[in-house]
Length: 150
Image (cartoon, rainbow, N blue to C red; front, top):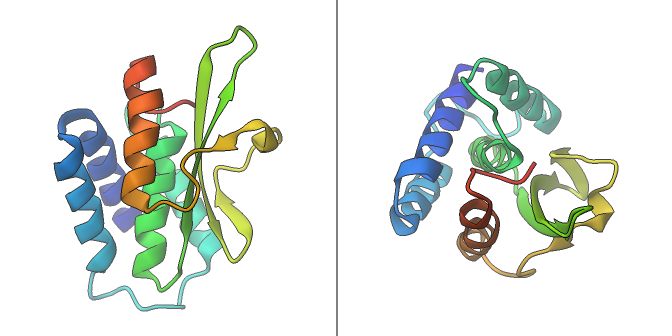
């Protein structure tokens, strides 16, 4: 859980203070360089999601779906998974734009499951993680004035 807490703290801080390119580069470096103690296949994807969720409980303030999904994505890559970051938008009841981020692996949602996820339209399908984060961040994060939509 310590590794997920550290990554989650970095992701939340990066979303708030770093320019997009610096943040994107940080995520790319984190994803490529697992700590030496991480060995692929030893930890179940569900256990990683649980560790991310538990880490979020000890963070100050509200932890939204985007930092949770980004953290799970990084840590899952460290442990040999090929996760897919999914970002979507939907119109709320009063016409406001709502965003949601989730991670899928092997066709299953690992983190970010919602009962009404089907109403979210994926943003920029088929694009790289970098392009998706940029699109999601510019529409939802900056447009709504906080780090995520859910």
